[in-house]
Amino acid sequence: MFTEQETFDTVVSYLRKQGGPALERDGTTKDSVCLYLTDDGKSCAGGCLIPPALYKKAFEGSPVNAYTEVGILVKKLGHNIQLVRQLQRCHDSAVNRTPENTWNDSFEEHLKRVASGRATGVPLIYVVPFNYNKCGPHGDFGGSVK
Image (cartoon, rainbow, N blue to C red; front, side, top):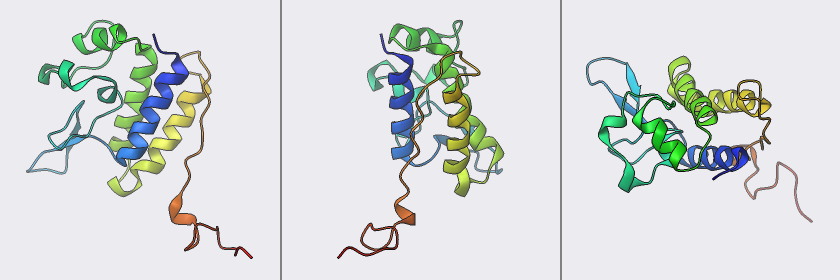
C-alpha cells in the first residue's frame, strides 16, 4: 500500500522527467487523445503506475475509478484511486487547455490544486520544480562564484 504522498511523488517525478503528456495524435486533425501508454513509451499519470506486464490496450479510453478494469488494477497495486484520478485530470487538463509548449506550466498549476487537498481531502507536499533554463551558464542564477 502506498501513501498518498508516495503516489503523488511517483507520478509527479515521472511526468516531470518525461517532459510532456502521453498523447496519440489524430493524423487528420489537431485533436489528440491522452493514453495510458503510447507507442513511443510515454505514460499518463495513471499509466506510469502500471507495470508494463500488466498494461492492456483495453485500458485506453477508460478513466481510473472503482468501476473500470484499470481503476481496479491501480487500487490493487496499492494506490488511492481518487488521487490517481485527480492526477490523471491534471495530465489531461493541461493537454486540453494549453498549447503543447506550455504543458509543463499548466500541469504544475493543476498539481498545486491537487496538493492543496481540496479535491481528495488529503493535503500533500508540493515541491516546486527546479528550472535549469533560469540558471546562468555555470548553474549560478546569474551571479558568480569567487
